[in-house]
Length: 548
Image (cartoon, rainbow, N blue to C red; front, top):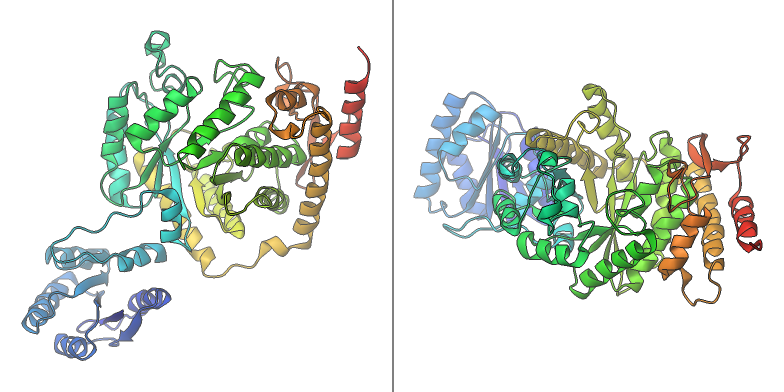
């Protein structure tokens, strides 16, 4: 594959065109640069000599001059029999608008496109009169297609009385081409009472997201995304009627993957009707259902503990448990989610150490039948209300996340602390995240090798094994206690798995105390003294063994 590109006419600006050629070279193209200020005749002569597959034209001066030069160049290319070549243009936004008038350029760049967007344009080769091919519509294939850049995902659902605003917003987001995965943010009735309209409360329409109420609503929402870059679509799992709900999502929106937990979205957190142990069994059945259909499963378990101020060791333990359960349930592609700044008083160093420990725990289970894909996201509770600071927070968080080379970045819009993101704010947040990711991919210092980060990671791995051994000790008669719903529920009841914000919860102990110690979240006793996991679990197991 060969590509020819240069600056046209009297334009001497070459930074954009050379960047374009660098990206092309990274894809294996043989590149040739005509240089600055190439007149149309010289451009055509070079194209005839090289016979390129792609011709790239750059012009960054005045729109009027651009129109004259492009008219001359397009005519000469046609006369030379080169009008069947793939043509691409780069310039300032006003000049790019002129280039679009000609209708011959397959791609028109305005200068702020990421390298990923350029790679995407170069990879796609529509024939004469053909539409641009649709990007892969399965998440694993799309990850491979977009690599090395991560997929970008964002929740979106307008909290309104109807789905109409969300329909319009989805179309706008898809046309923008900035998101690879659009996650429907459903309201509570859509998650809990989708099949039980008699329990739906009209007064709560749109509380927390888009109020889809039947399968036709879901089909319309999906149809709105069938344009632009054709983002994958997925939705929250239901909190009741799990398998029926999963089937509806697959049939209506081609649900890209299932996201579920083990210990949440039930009576313990008030988001579903099931008690803890039966809920764990329901979640496992949901994993198994998707595994049988070769649909990926996302574990959103760990960060729900982190958002409730659980110590880092508990977060790592539930991360390991979820990956283990998912593998046992037959999940083949596991999307492991790592929420940074959860809780928000982590330091970046200790946050990264916790993530690295979770990655090692989950990916130690990977084999030919169980692939693990990394998804990172910014902490839901970490955003400043001030919108300028929030934008800065999004950027710095994504830069930190790129240290672990995620396959997917779940972008959390910078408006999170103030309001649900509009379509335009989703687009803006995704563009920010995409830009930071591209900068990081050019070559960042490797923060994972920081001695403090590595020391904390190793400490967490050791402490996590102590906690996991204690949980196994609750059911020594079982071959696999970590996959047993009653054992896991007992781990919560006894306080082996605990968080301060579970106080007065009927399913949990809520007795643990935590604090930030040099940026790490640790368990402490009543006097604020840090507890090792051996100490903490030893006390609990002694209580469990005590008669009566």
